[in-house]
Length: 372
Image 1 (tube, rainbow, N blue to C red):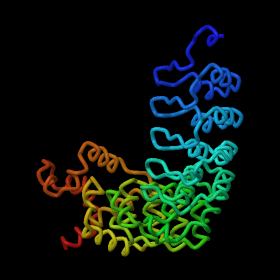
Image 2 (cartoon, rainbow, N blue to C red):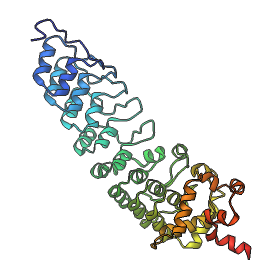
Image 3 (tube, rainbow, N blue to C red):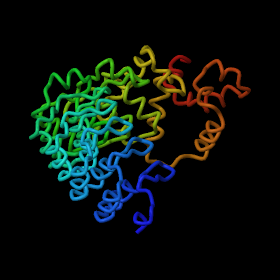
């Protein structure tokens, strides 16, 4: 009725969205048809270059999508991020819309502005039917994004086991090697235990190292899958990796220090179970000669005996004494940078005995030995 009385189908709201785009979002076939018959331009874009076709691919309404295509909608149109309607349908797991767009000439290997492929988006959705449809029409699983991410990485990170199982045998080892990251890193980073178990079962190396071009993106220069699991607090993933033979000495920063500083005591206990106390002291002592460790641990370096005593204190099952709780309160009122800096502590107007107590020197085995 509004169109019959002269209302323009091209008017937009504050986000530059057309009435046609909004009608598609509402899933109203009759409204979309009326607007098209009233002269609406099917390729009209909003501020983000989003079209009604993109919206139909997202909503997943085949009838509306077919209607738009019959009236001139293009499957190659890209939004502000360089994503085609095919990529949108894949991202949202709308297999029927994906099939229609492919039949109308959609490029299954199209890449967005950041290099993400349509298959990468489908792997993120977890819809196995969408992934298999793209593969049947020639989608390449070994094409990485500009961030060196493959579809197999996305599936492992998101925890889509069936999609991962499909991609493992068809993703080339060369593509994984060039990406600089094994899918087992992605599974550990995402805390996906089932994906981790599947990758281990399929022979992926639990001691695979990040490529330098990936590792340098992290301030701690991490390298191993175990480090990802520890730093993110995924105890079960760490346990699975250790059971499969993951080494604890592959990263510039020792995993035990990361777990201690983050107060993740289950992880500390897990790591202690595979290390003797002497090995732990040697590992932490060695840590102080590794570059970048201070940058990663903003509280500054700590002595081996301090770390071990902290572990012993934190993991004890006995109730804490009032004296120890007082120590914690004092430490809370002081900056950790000061506590870990011998020169700064020397300037603090505390009696020597109190300084030793606040900094856990009463647990310092090395300090006691040096006094004898």
